[in-house]
Image (tube, rainbow, N blue to C red):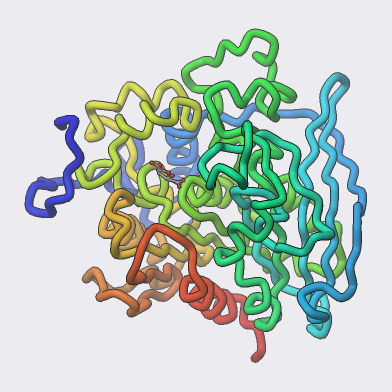
Length: 410
Ligand code: GTR
């Protein structure tokens, strides 16, 4: 593969992907039980070993504290709570602050979407009562909103267009979100003050082994800790919790959904390379560029595939297969060529054989659909017109998909 970015479909080349059902010993699983017992654990281990890194066995305590409660949020339609999730061991503590929105009028317990946000809970909802996060933040917003890697008042509501809270609440769902920087700051040294330092044995030296977890796995771990809390909240229907993420946080949502089968539905929005885009397709972002730009996201082993994606023993359709038979929604955007929208679709398509083992249709369709024509059965897919982003259109599809699969009466 050369170093320039390819956006020409005719130059993508021939990319046959590994057979999702063929085990390491050459045999092929033919039924759901063999998938669950033999093939699924193999694939999970391959992703941990070669892509995201292995999440260590961690011993920790947790406690939950309600920091605030507003029973008249969002103009009176929701209850908003901020909950501190304190994760501790003998020497360290990490605190995730979850913003939880529950519809006031819906019958409890409610189904819910959980997802990390990029800029703090105050950026999701401009309500001045929400404190500005104090944690390190990338200086990628305008110069007033983040100063010296700290969010300011100007960033209030900054990403609210990505979280249409009223729409979610009106549809009878709850929403829980937290700042991903609560778990680990998104830069190569971010691990030093995050959960990978606090809770893994290599913490003092920072000498990660090539198969140790990267930042994406840490954020995924944080999503599971948020789930732990949600499971204790009787107002939330814990068998109807969807995990959702956009872009790098879409990669984290997918890995969380693969590792933690308590997530009943998974949504990948524009997750691209290292998410739903097939690694073997030379289109848009490559393994090499993602590893060079974000050396902390994946494990050391992943870097050995920088120039050899075809040598990776798995491809991303197998990550989609790890979600089966649970519903999976894959959302792409037409102008988001960097994330390879067609490669995201193909991951879903090539995961279909896993859903078939369970007697289910995955995507079912074989052709990449036109823009704004959602398709699929247990795997949903749409290609939205427009850019790399999360929009109300995307959420309308996620909600429709979740209403159908969670069988929510309307
Ligand atoms: C890009 C990165 C993508 C995607 C995106 C994002 O720079 O190359 O893989 O994760 O960032 O998270 O917004």
